[in-house]
Image (cartoon, rainbow, N blue to C red):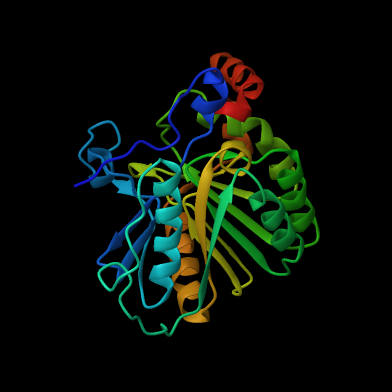
Length: 277
C-alpha cells in the first residue's frame, strides 16, 4: 500500500495552500471499475455518527472505457503529490469495451464550473433540480437561477436540514429571500444529512460529482464532476432528486421570517467569510 498527502500546506503561502484543497473522490479498482461521487471514507458516510445518523449521498459506479479517463485524473493528482506514476501495462490499463451509456468527466481546478453551470441554467426551458449539502452560489449563479424562474422554469433546490460545519447553513440564507420572491422552491432534507451533489435540467443535462453548489467548489477546490448523457440515466437521477424533495420540508415565508436574532447574526458573519466556507 502506498499513501500520499495531496495539496499539503506549505510555507510561505500557508493561508493559500490551506484553502487550495483537492476535493475529488475517486476510486479505481483493477483499472476496470471506477467510483465517483460524494462519498469520503469515514464513519459518518456509513451512518455511524449519532449526530447525523442516516447519510444521503450519490455515488456513480462506472465500468467500460470511461474508467481509464477517470484513472488518468487520479494519476495526475498522484503525480502532483510527487509520487511515481505506474508504468503503462495491462495491470493498470486493461483492454476495456465502450460502455452503452455516454458520459463525460469534467475535472476543474477552481475555474470553469461556475461558467458552465450559468450557461446550462440560462438555456433551461422547463425545470432545474439541484441537490447540494452547501448552497453559497455567489451573485452570478443566483441571478441566473432567478432569471430562469422568472421566465417560467421550475427551479427546486434540495439542501440538508442539519449542518455539519459551523456557519455553512447560515451562509445560504442571504440568498433565499430574492429566490423565494422569484418562486424558487427550497427544500430541507430532514432525515440525517444530505450530502449528494447533483443537478438535472430539462431531461437532457445531468451533473453528478464532487462539487458543492458553493464558492469554494467553484473558485478554490480541485473537483471532478460527471456529465451523464443517456436519457435513461438522467431519468434515474431526476426521479431520485424528485423523490427526496417529496420527503423534505419546503422552506416557507413564515419559517424564513421567524428566524431568531442569533440566526440572523450568524448569517451576517457567514456572509463575510462565505468565500472560505
